[in-house]
Length: 399
Ligand SMILES: Cc1cc2nc3c(=O)[nH]c(=O)nc-3n(C[C@H](O)[C@H](O)[C@H](O)COP(=O)(O)OP(=O)(O)OC[C@H]3O[C@@H](n4cnc5c(N)ncnc54)[C@H](O)[C@@H]3O)c2cc1C
Image (cartoon, rainbow, N blue to C red; front, top):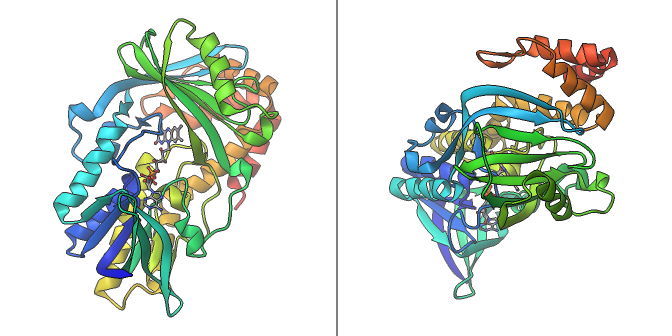
């Protein structure tokens, strides 16, 4: 079998992989970026919402053509249809994900990485108990070849076989993967360009439904459910029901089905010669399922650790474990809290959610200059049911 040699091989050209490859290539390391799909970023499996522009501008200059729509606030809709809305211009935007992923991969190529689309990693190579590269299939010619590398990066997203091949994790339990379905709906009034979250057991059991403005009269409307609470009904069936009620006259375009990982973080993100990044490393926010910015943050930490290890004593398990530590001190730490908050929040019954949202509507000053005021939110919870505050505190503060 043919063999090639690189300093770094990255599996997957989503945000995590492209950003990691851009940074390792920019540091002078020969970098191969593998993507099994024919086209980077296509088809899009994402609702495309991100936070404020500055969150993205840390990683990529943000040209207006990447912005599908600004987001000027958010609304929570209770199971019975009560609405808590907060106008917050600049809170985020809906990104054109296909163009965004292509731009990130382009930045990697510009920095010197070699990008190969339609090339799928089918296994890892191991030498002396360490990961030593990947086995690859060129999907166009069906040729198989080996790539040896000092470091292999698993950025293979929700499918994420590579962390399993590397021995970092086993299979997911059903509750750890939110089952999602989404359509692009056209011909609706997006009003004040708010993002909407709809809650309730009959809307999206164990999760939520969303409507995110995509253009002047279009939106990404979808939902994510916990399959264990769905009574055997598929996400796509919940979606059709939601759309019939929510946007009856709209045309339903582009269907997306897939999963997003909402598991507790992995205990280890790296081993000798290998590290996982982005969704493959469970770096998504476990409360919302969102993971674009987290993937970019993970990539920066991963690439920094790789460069440091290769300039020092080599990519041993110990050297690369600094990446796990760095993640756990930063976004990983916040994710632990989000995970506990998710266990609490999605475990509330419809009645409790109804009371909480009703109280939020009646709590003055809940939304301040910098977002939701946590103290007033706690007050709203306490007034709806004091036991909720104890349950929340016990869950979130538990180590
Ligand atoms: C319905 C839905 C809605 C979402 N909405 C949002 C949202 O609004 N905001 C948000 O922030 N996040 C959202 N997410 C989550 C977000 O899409 C992911 O967190 C993000 O894409 C993670 O980036 P990544 O680079 O880790 O993985 P990905 O973007 O999934 O990239 C992984 C890449 O690896 C490739 N690959 C996989 N295996 C191999 C292999 N063996 N060889 C070569 N290539 C391979 C894949 O083809 C893919 O291109 C949503 C997810 C879903 C399913």
